[in-house]
Length: 147
Image 1 (cartoon, rainbow, N blue to C red):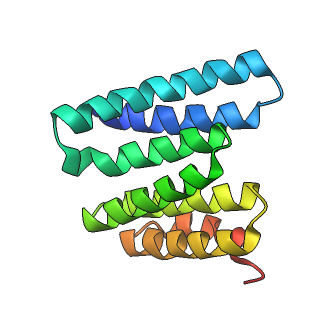
Image 2: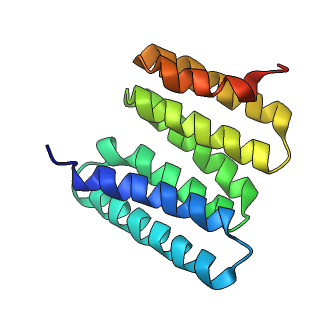
C-alpha cells in the first residue's frame, strides 16, 4: 500500500521541526530542517484551503505549533497546540488528538513547565489507550511518574 501524500507531509514536517530543535546548536543545519518543516506545513495549509478544512485544519495547527516552538514564540505555540487538540477532538481524529497532546506535553516539558506537561501527557496516554495503542500509551508513563 502507499501512504497518502498528506500523511507523509504531516509526519515529515513534525520530524523536521523536532530535528531542527534538537540540533539547534548548529545554525545552518538547524535552519535546513526548519525550512523542510515549513515547506511541509505550507503544503498542508494549501490542502486545508483547497481540499478540506475539516480534514486538515488540526494538522495545520499542529505543524504551526511546532514551528512556533522552534521559533521560540511560546505563547503562540501554546494557543496552536490547544487549537490542534480541540479540532482533532471536534473532528473525531482520536489518534491525532493523542499526538497533539503528546507534542504539547513535550513542549511544556522542554520549556521548563513539567507540572503543566503532565496534564498533556496524561491526556495523550488516555487517548492512545482509547485508540487501542496501548504500547504507545505505555511509552508515556515515564513522563507521568511523580504526578
